[in-house]
Amino acid sequence: MSGKRVPGSPDLRAFLERPVLEVAPALLGSVVRHGEVAVRLTEVEAYAGPDDPGSHAYRGRTERTAVMFGPPGHLYVYFTYGMHHCANVVCGPEGTASAVLLRAGEVVEGVDLARARRARGGDRDLARGPARLAQALGIDLGHRGADLVDGPIRLVLADPADLDHVMTGPRVGLRGAPDRPWRFWLRDEPTVSAYRPAKVITPR
DNA sequence: CGACCGATTTGCT
DNA sequence: GCAAATCGGTCGT
Figure 1: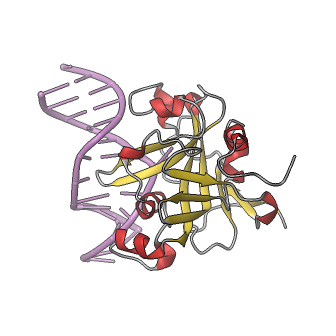
Figure 2: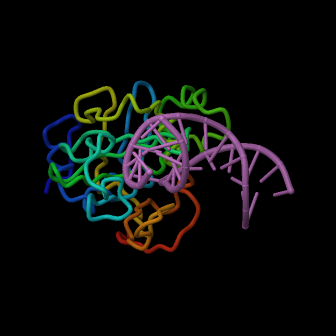
């Protein structure tokens, strides 16, 4: 149980292979970098494969969702409402089709470029919401399947000791199984979307 | 091939 | 608070 994790190391992929409900909260505070833009994650959501009615993998493997069924550490990107892209980190053992939706974050580098990619909103809103986060990072369908351990888009894990209050509550915007408390976020972060029923799981 | 839906965002009432 | 925008995925014909 070492506290430090080195970016790009085999340790990262091994970590992402752990169960999604373990990986999801641990991604908070971590940084996703694509080129000059870097986002520190403040809100994520877990999706648990074919048994989860809220998951795109619920109806089995399709061409779209194939990445979710593959090895952990890759990016599952989907397109929705005819205009938005959202990004997920595939995790858990290969074949479990579980993933973590990146719901919100704080742009910590490349603010100018992130601003240029978004027509509206203040800096706090640049990566607030899954579609805005993907847009700020310049992520689209072309990045589906991208390797986060060794590719253009990288994940750099945070030291768990640096995390503030980790909160959990119901997922957002779902038709199926909205009741499962599989949404995780950092308390008191201005980049986290509006309040929902919640409880603290790691008081600090 | 046609119809319907959507893990959202935005702007207007 | 509510509805429009806009198109890939999925399923049924």
